[in-house]
Length: 79
Image (cartoon, rainbow, N blue to C red; front, side, top):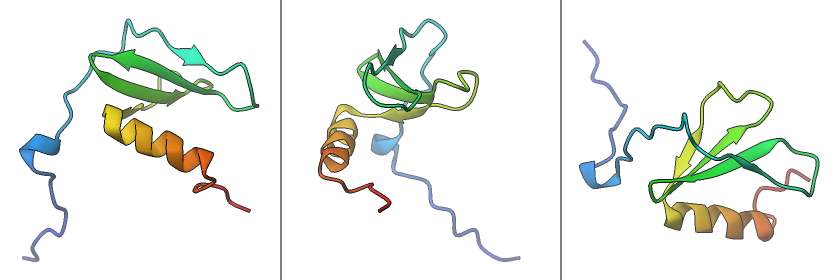
């Protein structure tokens, strides 16, 4: 039997399972996307507003900052 190559992050990097049922989702007033974010228990959750029952990404504050700064610097531009 082959060994699994999937690695689990160390315990200190695991994020809790957040209850997002009462989250106050916010949408940007600029742009055309339907991305929504919510601040819950010290974390930032992000979801597709067109599919609110779908999965959400959960960021620590440091991860969120890196994501936002990368987006501002064009790190994710596809052109």
